[in-house]
Image (cartoon, rainbow, N blue to C red):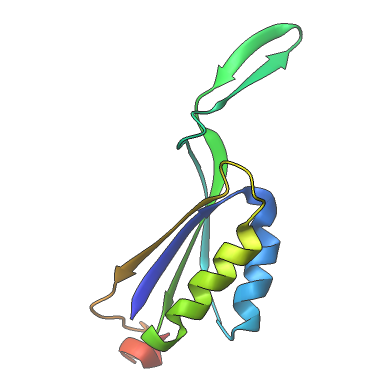
Length: 112
């Protein structure tokens, strides 16, 4: 099993969710986060004064998948979150040693 974590632009969330549910994923976790990468934030003008925003709003998606779904999930996120501009985000993949569904006690792939 793998944990797929993606940091994307907030307005792309619905497209990514639709792409993942079309693959048969039954659940995912979404968090509103802030951060910066190569973008290094941005400059805004408010009431005539210029100020810098160091941390930009992003969305973090986390989903645990079986190994056979991994490539399709990563590809779906990449395609649906892509705008072609800087700051589109990143996808990280990590190993998961064990999963347990609290309600039933099911483990690993059955718990997903």
